[in-house]
Amino acid sequence: MAHERTYRESDPYLSDLRRICLAFPEAAEVEAWGRPTFRAGKKMFAVFGGDDDHQYVLVFKPDPADRRGLLSDPRFYSPPYFGASGWLGLDLTGGHVDWAEVSELMDASYRLVALKRMVKALDAGAPAQGRRQGS
Image 1 (spheres, rainbow, N blue to C red):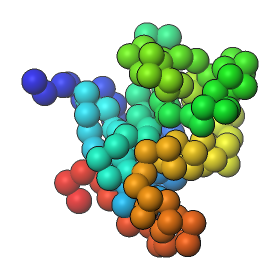
Image 2 (spheres, rainbow, N blue to C red):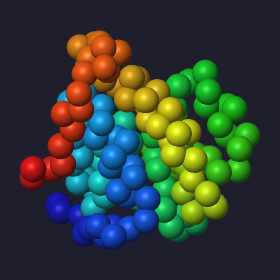
Image 3 (cartoon, rainbow, N blue to C red):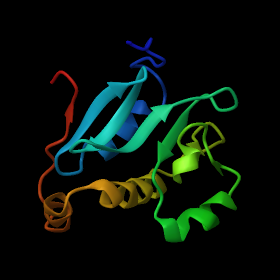
């Protein structure tokens, strides 16, 4: 069953998020559940979307050591569906977005799901090979 697209190409934050996520070795953007998802190979490390309480959200897999600390910040929350698996949501609409912080969060999330060769390429400074679905 195909899901209706829940975002627009012009949505704020999406182009910055793409720039960060697609810079990782072998990263790809795939639309799933009507949302852009970012993957290391076949495994997701980020989702751009929203829910009833947050218009624009970045859902990601945090480093387990950082999860509790992140949840003490009101910008972070346990999102529907993903939260039960340890993922967190970052409300992007709460004010100024610190893109350096987002880059660090995406780096940690990518490393948690990427294959060893991908992490090795990242550590070696390999050029980005990210792609969008259909490109």
